[in-house]
Image (cartoon, rainbow, N blue to C red; front, side, top):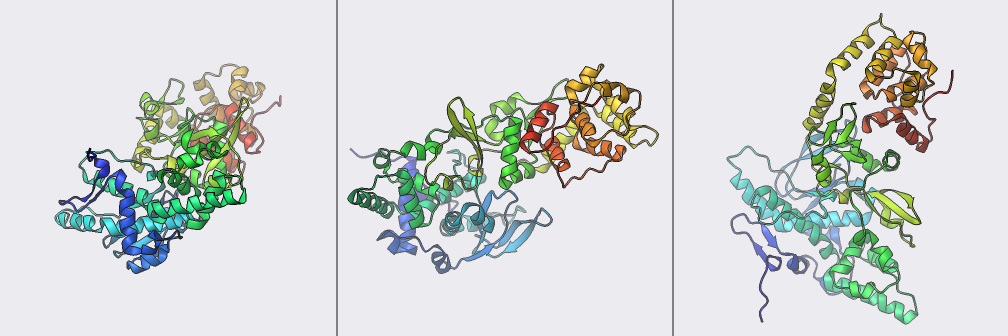
Amino acid sequence: MNHKKTPSDILDVDQKTGALIIGKNRLDDYAKKYLNEHCKEALMEPMPLPVENILENAGLTIKTASLSRNLDIFGCCMLLDGYVEIYDKETREMRETFYPAGTILFDPDSEWAYGEGAKRNTLIHEALHWEKDKKYFQVLELRNKTESEKLYPIMCRQSGMYYEPPEGKKTKANQIKWLEWQAHRLAPRVLMPIDMFKQKALEIIDSWTESDIIPSCDSLIEELSAFFIVSRTSVKYRLIEVGLQDVISVFDDYEELYTEINNITEHIALTPEEAFVLLSQNVILEEWVESRNLIFVDGYFVIPSEKTIRIDSNGDLHLTKTAKKNLSLYTLNIVEHKSVEYKNSAKDLVGYAYMYKLESVDKRLIAFHPKFQTDLKDEPSKVYEGFVQYIASFDEDEEKELLRMLGDPDTTLCQCLWHSIQKAGWNQGLDLYDNTLVHENYHGRIKKNQYNNMGRDVLMAICVGLKYRSNIVKKVFEKAGIVLKEYHDPDKTYLRIIEMMPGLSIREFNSILEKAGIRQLGSAQK
């Protein structure tokens, strides 16, 4: 009986647009076709693919450039003459730069952060775009002659690694997403062609049998990664794709090596301390948070907007129902799985922000990686600006009055603070202590205008308790005649927490300071 053809079995070209159509079952066929034209020997014996020779023979030029602030974009290929947004690290701004067709741009920081395998994967990914998508963009350029829309190259994003576009959606944007999906799936298949990869894997396993070596997924992945010069993650997936799962699943360490793939919990909520620890140890996560203006609310780093964040009657921030129902669209995907240790486990965590926590007798690993951010929306800066206005409008008259008082030379620091303390409803000394951990006796001294020379730690504790935004904190310290050292600790950490995690209680704030090794705020002085 003939097998009925499905969309997964198609390998064709859209006659109207020139776009390549590849079904999931035909990816290895296309990879073979590409290698047959560009490097036949890679189909005859296992070998590390001579990537740069292939690009040179195809007439492609490699140039380096920083393509994103948060290292999400590894590379792109100029299918037409045109402009690309390049990130200027000195000005921290994007600027358009012209490149001719046939130029492959590669971000060198990606190799620094993720290794040579990431570079080789990116270069062959972009060479595949040149091979299969050039005609599509040429047709698109002809159709756009009468339009003012610019055509930008397809960006190779880590966050798009596991993304699969919707089927049946006939828009230009979705068609381009499918072209990128193809490149993501094809690159490892070209670097590790199915027959030769399988042959090499079985050769290694057979050599162990002959030498009485205990088979190990970790060792197999390491040897294949070194031989083909690809990442360990690519090898893990490729072993499954070529049909060797039944072979390796009997190895003693299979469950440990495939925990991240088979047993992962996504979009977990963090404590403020956990969030700060992750942020502090990984510059890539820090750039993801800062470049997208994310703030920490209800356990998640969320895109701030009226759609995602609501303000309760006390002025505290919370996720909206929309955000809670669509965490993948509006919050960073922080994942968790059982912590496992094996010889090369550290290599499998390169590029991650991660930490460990004990849960009963189980040790868990909490981690961030750009590849998990598949569905996160990329909102324009005006969305954040709108949110700032939304926050300010919650008690706009109160903020204006406080700013007026802070700017009035005849109004003292105590009078400004007392104005906010009354608004907060801190009627007793214990209210002051509960919200700031500042001794209750200071309540009366501030009320009587007798404590205008308070120290920086006490003043910062009061600012945190009153949930002042960073711009107000700076004005308050200016009023007190205390210089805030924004680029040096502890002030740097104080302001960073206030900006990224607005509305934390003083105890939550202090728990983060403890993790950071900074003296906690508050006072026991009478």
